[in-house]
Length: 255
Ligand SMILES: O=C(CO)COP(=O)(O)O
Image (cartoon, rainbow, N blue to C red):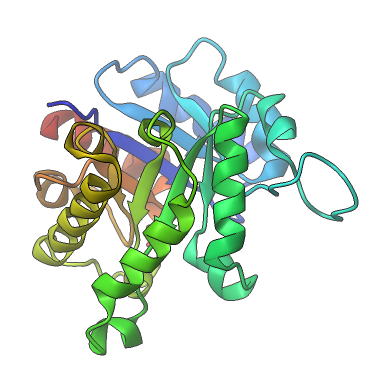
């Protein structure tokens, strides 16, 4: 398999610094040195520094949930790529549907962040996905195409293998409604084709495309068996050590 599976936990606005360290200790005690799967945890900003210390010497990587595209300046409440790098952050979730919806983030703004993250040696996890109304109107692939192309504008062939795409159908996030494996694989294959058109097959084959939306240990094996599903971006099930560990084990079994 050319693509290593990747399991990323998006803690969203959950866990204090102390809660985060406790969770990381439970996770790393069981799978901290598992070599076969890439694992990333994405705590809130306030828990990054203590999480980085708890992850020292472990293979689990650290991600942030957002960043601002500018280097520094008068952007109250925001955090730059350089600030994240100084806390040993390697990945950053960008364009999550919750940020698109609640914070009015556009493809153009998300694109600036993607470009800035790559320029600062961070690996962006670019989230794309349709709402229920868009799916019902038959617009799923058009929406995903617009968000993917918009997010990746200006990203070069040299940079693209550092990008991770996460397909997260908005109607499946936090709802318990998981996309069927066929629904997910259809969109993942579509994204892979799009990446092939943009960057050519050899590079497109190397890019990880994660599924996100009510993924849990019970439905992960079936999803992860699909040809173009290279891992998961996990919300709710990443908040408990047991379910997160079981998701990582499912990815290990599917590799
Ligand atoms: O939004 C998600 C990950 O970014 C998915 O959240 P849930 O796993 O809670 O549905």
